[in-house]
Image 1 (cartoon, one colour):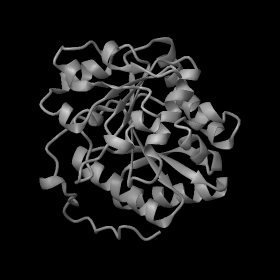
Image 2 (tube, helix red, strand yellow; image 1 turned 30 degrees about the horizontal axis):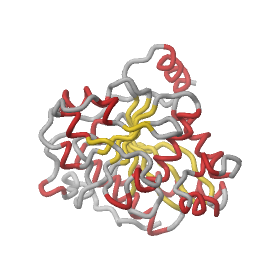
Image 3 (cartoon, helix red, strand yellow; image 1 turned 90 degrees about the vertical axis):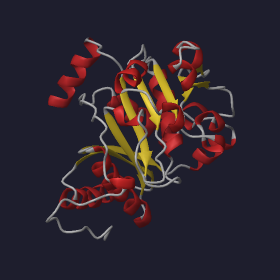
Image 4 (cartoon, one colour; image 1 turned 180 degrees about the vertical axis):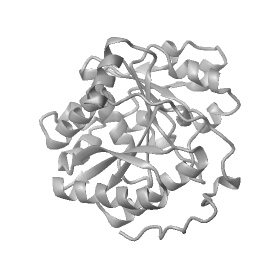
Length: 284
């Protein structure tokens, strides 16, 4: 009830964009497809959505969608060479896409980055590319929510935990949302989330919230072959239904203040507070 009331207040009195950074412990959990399908589902619900694409090459949002976005460049916006509306190319499904590599975001203040994130869009989805130390970009760390995408597999859950651990100690992020992707049953999704929540709470003292799950669906691969998202190509499938449900729920998430970046551990390494027992990384 508290979450719904806070969400309703936000819907009735818009105060900037909700910024959600979507990431994961590995590159095979469906992070980019989650961003694209959420963007399409939110746009279909009448929301103005901006996708900030930190990936490059064949893994980028534009590449996944067949290059139809022709995404503009973030650095051109920050230098004043292009307006955000001009640089953020509009996809036929109704959402805009802006390319923003980690290098593009370097050297700008929190206020400068915040001015771009809090534009006219209702929701900003960042396809957050972690660096080699597993930490967020200067742009993605400004997000109100960090959504961790994982799968029902021991290795994927281990990597999701390691991802949260690095982000917690690098950015002081204490709250995460978790989406379990490619699930065969509701029971499997709940078991995966509960195992992850129990270990994260014990060793990291962070709070993680169940953002839901997306069903395993053979038409996901087919939609990818067509350079389309499943929400658009096969809207009646279980996966498309789950993405639409997540998009609707996202509108009522309580707004949290984004963490402010700090220096973090040297070389991006995670360090445990003195006296805390080291975690097993990860016995599930």
